[in-house]
Length: 379
Ligand SMILES: [Ca+2]
Ligand SMILES: [Ca+2]
Ligand SMILES: [Ca+2]
Ligand SMILES: [Ca+2]
Image (cartoon, rainbow, N blue to C red; front, top):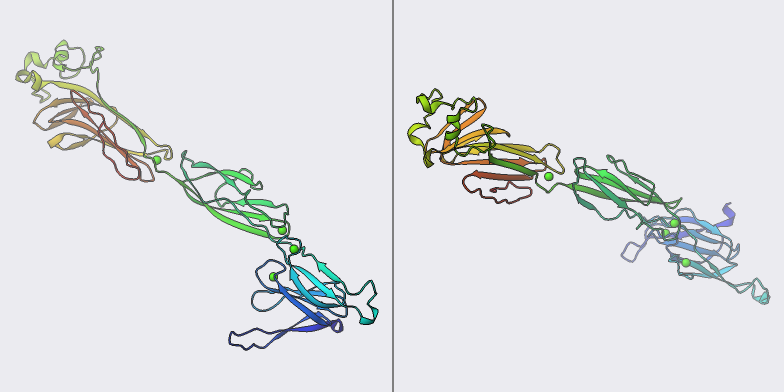
């Protein structure tokens, strides 16, 4: 084999007008003509040589560090006396043109004095494009359904490409389609798209991020209730007490003046000052993304401080400068300057909603929302 190849010496410039020691590469026997181009589009310069005797063209593929991989031989250009490169068919790949000189005495030979063009058909790798990074609002406690579109991927040679999507935690609907989808959980999930033209592959990595920026929804009420079930809300319970219509221990107090409930609301404190209201505190919260948002509630009693309260709690409230709170038979009895129900609902992502409902002759409604931060409001 060695007698049909000659050596091509390759020397590296050192940037100071000198060259380092050389390596030798096997090409055709009489490499009279040479040219440079990147024939396989890998970004590294390659060398083509033409063999003046054996009518071979050899290409040495540059490997990027000054060396070359073994050559590829093509038997086309006759007695190449010069070689150059250019993209003659406009496909972006460098082609080779060789000028052949036949024996000067045989100038009429049909084989002599020709120009040969070798069109480059080197396969180039495809380009994977899995689309942009995705950021979506969470749409359920399981996350969000998100579509991935890799149809922006391409092959510079027009080769048909295959798709392979993968993600460590998400089951994708059709991982071998150009576009796919999956149910992505809250947070950041890595996705990889691999495309192949059958010979070369390319990867694109992207992140899919599902966020929860919306605070929980809340319902709450602090409404007058029909505590003695007479089909009327108990705005003036003193009147109801005298009918003895339920078994609340308030019933009948007024007659004997004995307050075994240690409750001296009656007697001389009738009228506006003594007005009492039976109320029920009710509240609940839900969140699109968090199936179990945290909810806490308290009764704010003005200068008398606060009391934790559960949803469904019945409250007997009397406006008073006194601070008295007792629970009896399931009823929270409160005497305080004011009464407000203050509820906070928070999701796992730190979004909070706070709503305060004030008990009074006219109930003020207002609400503010502060995603990702505690908020304060009145309802
Ligand atoms: Ca190359
Ligand atoms: Ca070309
Ligand atoms: Ca290709
Ligand atoms: Ca939320």
